[in-house]
Image 1 (cartoon, rainbow, N blue to C red):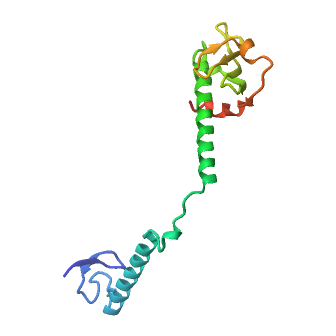
Image 2: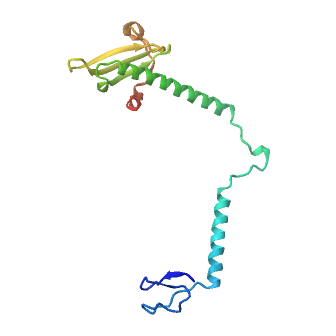
Image 3: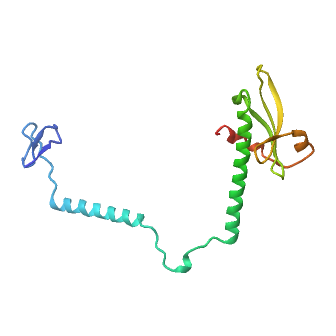
Length: 169
């Protein structure tokens, strides 16, 4: 014998009581048919969930796909491009951190030359609070080299679009 709440008044009554002593409402009893139906429904739902969560099995060895040579080359090229972009961002970030007021750094232009030299034009505040524009050349070893000799009259890939990632560094 267990105590259950009356659905009408909310008072506790015996599970075997024919009616609630407070309000007279008859408790709803779950019949055997209803218990079996709910049990089967629960089993069906659980078996469906387990069936959906199983990984697909490989039926034949020829269904295993091996990336094509072109796909492997494309992946390698993407990885190299990402590594190059990270190198560029790190060099620009190092330049920003050398400023007197790093938060004032604003990238105006960044050109990556064939030899790996990065030609950067940027704005920032100087020690007196004035906004100045300056240009620096940074080689692949992250050393600042003379801008005029390294960058004047040379062309390369414009990587200025990477400035959106600088705020995250």
